[in-house]
Length: 295
Image (tube, rainbow, N blue to C red):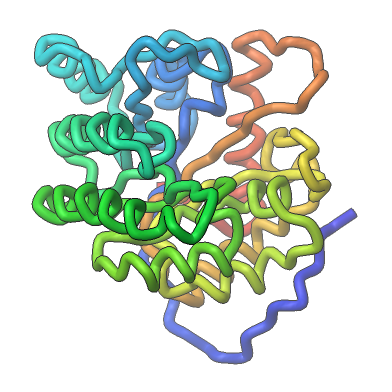
């Protein structure tokens, strides 16, 4: 079933600059960033959303991390060289570290910001925090400002994931943005997570509510079912209209990174590396068929 949004804008706006079509290595599952760096150059994708993982914390996808907040200067230099030689460029860094309400997460995030800056990233993607009561707000605001002030010093925009907590949906995102009120705080809007974490939502109404704050996008297809882990190749599930996503982003003059994030389907047989990469190829083909320019 094709997803039909009730969102419509009759305003004619000039076409935005070409967006950076990137890939977040969650797309490669257990093969991780190593596979992304090796294989993305064989597609038309030139940009990478580089993950900086948590040292000593097993990844959900069980991949081998290429970078953590504890990586040595030598390891960082070697990875920079490897990425450069591959022909890829860094669109952003994903520095998800946990709940920034916690002091240790703040410390880890600050280290990751420094590393992201070494890779030339102008955007990072991470959590907006989770609170259990109104009393937690003051601490979260203080911690977020510590992070955001450092991001501002480095010329980095901090983009909050569409994740449970303050940024589960547009209403929560707007509350966080209003309470923190920092110029370097923006949104990473995930076209699949908005359905996974919320019931009875309209994708384009949600995007419209936070449109002026969207600085990063995760391109993810879904079957649209609440809490159903179903994120195949773009166009394979058919619930997200990527032609309309493109039109919406062009309409708001969006020019930031748009990263493929294809996290698979719960319960499906384990994919080979070839099968995993084929989903990237199929997704690029679908984007091109729906009017996206891959540059």
